[in-house]
Length: 179
Image 1 (cartoon, rainbow, N blue to C red):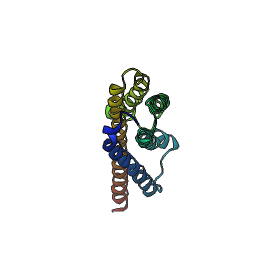
Image 2 (image 1 turned 90 degrees about the horizontal axis):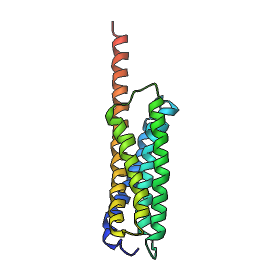
Image 3 (image 1 turned 60 degrees about the vertical axis):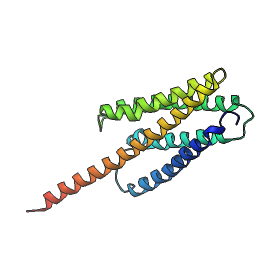
Image 4 (image 1 turned 90 degrees about the vertical axis):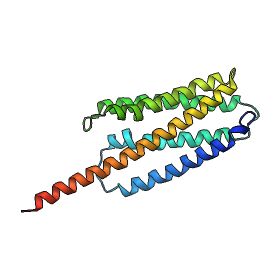
C-alpha cells in the first residue's frame, strides 16, 4: 500500500508475534482445561486476549494487503477500532459485575483502559487518515502495539493467577491430609 513501505518490517514482526501468541494462548488454555473456572471469568479475562491478538494480527495483514490507496484500509481499521471499543465496554461491564474476584487497579488498566484506548485510537486514526495519513499510520502502529502488549500482560497474568491458585489449593490440601 502506498505510504506503508517503510512499515513492512514493523508489521511483519508484530503480526508474527500476534499469530504466535494466539497459538500459545490456545496451548495454555488446553493445559488449564481441567481447572474449573466460570464462564463469566473466561469471557471476561481469557477471551479478550484472543480478541486483542487477533485484532493485532488482522491489522498487520490489513496494511500489508496491496491496496491502491489508504482509504479502504483506513475504513477497515477504523471499523475494527469502533467494534473493539464497544467490545471493551462490554468487558468493563462484565468485570464490574463479576462477584468472584474484585479487580485491582492493574486489572482495570490492562484489561480495560489500555485496550479501550487502543481501539479508540484505531477508530480516530481511521477517520484522520483521510487528511493526515502519516500521523494516522503512527497511530495505527501505536494502537497495534498497545493491543499486543495488553494481550501479553493479560495472558501472563492469567497463567500466573492459575498457577498461584493451584499452588495455594495444593498446599491447603496437603495441610488437611497431614496429622
